[in-house]
Amino acid sequence: MDQKEGHLQLTETSSRAEEGGGLTGFERRMLTGLLEACEHPKLSIVLWNGEELRGSSSEEPVARMHVRDRGALFRMLINPELYTGDDYSAGRVEIEGDLVGCLEQIFRGLDSLPDKSVKARLLRWMNRPRANTLAGSKENIHRHYDLGNDFYRLWLDTEAMQYTCAYYARPDMTIEQAQRSKLDHVARKVQLKPGDVVYEAGCGWGGLARHFVKHHGAGKVRAFNISEEQVRFAREEARRQGLDGRIEYVLDDYRNMSGECDVFVSVGMLEHVGVENYPALGDVINRVLKPHGRGLVHSIGRNKAAPMNAWIEKRIFPGAYPATLAQMMQIFEEHQFSVLDVENIRLHYAQTLQHWLDRFESHEDKVREMYDERFVRMWRLYLAGSKATFLVGALQLFQIVFARGQDNTVPFTRDHLYRI
Image 1: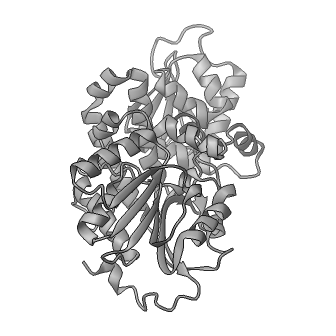
Image 2: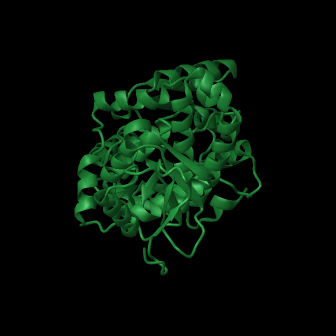
Image 3: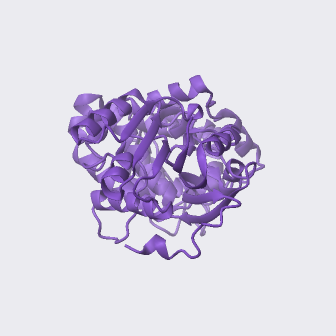
């Protein structure tokens, strides 16, 4: 094959190649076409017979992807987003070298496919996300968050089990310090005052509610969640810390909120709401937020509208969708909420994920005992792939602060955000 820069290089890497065991002409054209469409990534694909396809003839690959059988290759060619993850989980695909670096190359390549190409449109149709109806949301959340608290306890921070992006006010922070820093950052953004009533939509294991009461004097926090495992843990922890009189963990959907609050926060839930439900979320906020109330939404997002990675949506986070800022504005516009501040802390999530991945790998044997090898490989890929996605800019992390449009008590400057 042509050895010039930007062309694929085919090499024999082993004498194991057997007569008739290599690629057919059709398979070779499909595979080289895929790599060319992905702008010649710095990757090698090593086939079951030892043949190696290199995406660039001039640069060493950051990793080698070993495809163990023809069926795995066929699936990769049909739907690379979904089936490559499935076959890695099953051991039919192996990554030799830097896993995160390999996934960065893949995501950059897939992102380069023209939006209107037949391949791109077909992938969007095949990888449609699940709906987030009342019943659908509960099933989607159950499949991810109710895996068991013991599993998440292995690799999240040991203090509050925060399963959202941390905030590294200093780059050398531990994950525990950075998660506390995130909660304080949110508290400053909403100007939390002693005695404030806080409503939280999607509370995880309840760490934000406990932190707001213990360290910022919140008078009452009502935190809504539809994960039974998480709510059970949060209630037990509040009782253990003597906070249950000031925190109410509500096992219910955010759409059923009632009453009034001074502060509305949602940290890491919007990804599960679905854009079609954003106006309903805006209705909820309008119903409960007091005239001089403050609000914050913290969510994974995108710079340009696109669905969640198909494998993550179908195997890890069913129903998930990372919205653009323009799409998020559907929450605020109908009721004329004013957006006061938008911060993008994308690289903080990449660092958070590295901390989680390190801890996950240090407990790999325990996870394997709890589940199985496929589960270990699946979650390793999910954490590494998520870090890669933030590093390449395919995902963002937005924090949006808002208030009612006629509220003249809003802060005059942003000094309070960084006054520690």
